[in-house]
Length: 202
Image (cartoon, rainbow, N blue to C red; front, side, top):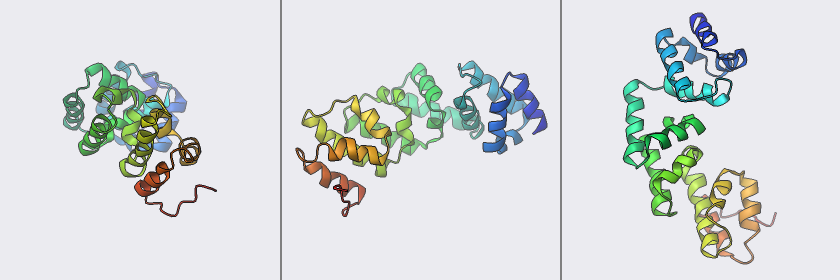
């Protein structure tokens, strides 16, 4: 660990970010110094701020994959129509998007394209969506949002906020607010979540 810690400091990584890596992902510091130094150089070259938490996250993501696995993930996104700039932008915003399986990536993108009417590249501006549970968050919430949009009660732009807010806020802002005028959203949400006994009145 000693040589790697010294290497990170020599690369200009602030001590508080080095400390964060030691406490949260110490196994990364057990990598071979030459490989970790190469990863740090690549991440810096991508334009990450060395003092940010996403810089540490990016190092961890790249360290967890072999070069061939990394290239394979890039190819998955390319096959979905993402440009090199879109892939890089998504990785800068949410480095963990590269940690998802090919199956999960394709499932989420397919859902938003074929069910929600998005362009594939729209997901590159919302990479956090790839981290959400498909069954427990994306499908239940989007099922409600589709009904609300069809009734002109919300706009497409509301989807990002709706998917990222807490369960309590989603219920308050998108279920309870509209359930009197569009009562079917309650049944849809309960059914998709498996919460048949959910008491929205409380």
